[in-house]
Length: 228
Length: 238
Length: 51
Image (cartoon, rainbow over all chains, first blue to last red; front, side):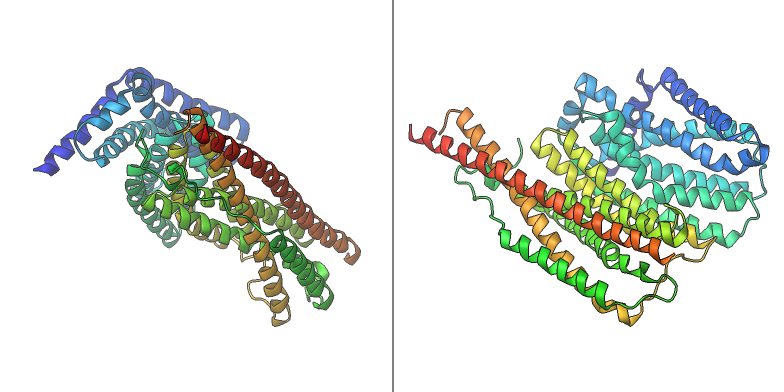
C-alpha cells in the first residue's frame, strides 16, 4: 500500500503546483502568450515567403516551445522558494522521489497544454500542410515534451535556487536538449515532407531512448540535488 | 549541515605540490613532437601541407574528451562518497577541458577556412564539439553562481555526470543529422605515414593536460584550505 | 594556394601556443597567490591555537 501512498503524494504535489497563482490560469495565459509572440516574431523575421515559412515551421514551433517552457520550469520552483515551502516539503515523511515525480507531473500537464496551443497557432501562421501521418507527428511531439519536461524540471530545481536563474536555466538546459531538438525536428520535417518513413523511425527510437535514459538518470540524481 | 568531510578536521591534509618540472618537461615534449611531425610528414594528396594542422587539432580534441571523462568519473565519485576533494578535481578538469575545447574549436575553424572556404560548417565533428563546449560552460557557470560549497559540489557533480552521459548521444545525433544529406566532409581513415606523428603529439599534449589539471587542482585545494583556516580563526580557534 | 595555406598552418600553431602559454601563465600566477594566502592563513590559525 506504500505505492498508493506515494502516488497520492505525487498527485498532491502536482495539483498544488498547478493551482497556485503563478501557474493557474493567469500564469498559463502569460506563458502561452509568450510562445505565440515568439512565433509571430519568428514569422516576421523569416517570412513573408510562404515556402520559406513552411520550411521553418517545425524549427519555429520548437524554439517558441523551448523559450516558453523555460519560464514555466523556473516558476514551478519559485513558489516554494518564496514561501520557504521547500524546506517543509522536505521535512514531510515519504520518499524524495515523489517530490520530483510530482513536479514532473505538474510540468508535464502544464507544458502539454501550452504546446497544444503553440502548435495550433504555428500550423496556422506558418502554413503547415497536415499530412496523413499526423498521428506519428503527435507521437514525436509527445516524446519531445517528455524529454523537455524531464530535463527542464531537473535543471530548474537547481537554477531556480541559484543567483542567476533566468540565464542559468537556458544555459544549462539548451545544450542538453540538442539531441532531442535534432530528433524531433528532423523526424517531423521528414514526415511533413517527402516522408522517408524509415528515416523518421530511427529518430523516434533515438528520442524514446533519450527520454528513458534521462528519466532514469535524473531520478537517481534528484536525491542529491534537492537537499537545501 | 553537510556530512563531515576530511577537510573539516583541524589537521588538514596539506594541498599537493605540482612540480614545475612536469610542466617544463611537457612543454619540451610538445615542441619536440610538433617539430618532428612538421619536418617529417609528407604533404597530403588533397590538402597539401594543410594536413599539418591535424597534429594540434586532433590531440586537442582527444584531450577535451579525456578531461570530460575525468569530470564524469569524479562527479560520480563525489555523489557516491561525498569527498570534497573529488569535487575540486572534477571542477579543475572541467576548466582545463573547456580550455582545450575552445582551442579545438579555433583550430577546427583555422583548418576549415582554407579546406572548405568558409570559417564554419555545420559538420558532425565541429558542431558536436561546439555543443560540448556549451555543456562545459554551463557547468562552470553553475559553479560561479552557487555560493554554498556543499550545494555547489552536489549540483556540479549531478550536472557533470548527466552532461557527460549526453556527450555520446549528442555526437550520434549530430552525425545522423549530417549524414542524411551529405557524406562526411573530413577523411575518416588516416594514412599510416601520419599516425606516428599524431600519437607522439597526443602523448605530449597529454602530459600538458595532466600538468594543467594537477596545477589547477592544487590551486583549488589551496583556496579551500585557506577558507577552512580562516573559518577556524573566525570561530575563535579551538 | 600553398602559400596561403602556410598562413593558416602558422596561425594554427601560433594559436595553440598562445592558448597553452597563456593558460600556463594564469595557473602559475594564481598558484603563487593561492600558496601565499594559504601559508598566511595557516600561520594565523597556528597562532590562534597557541594563544
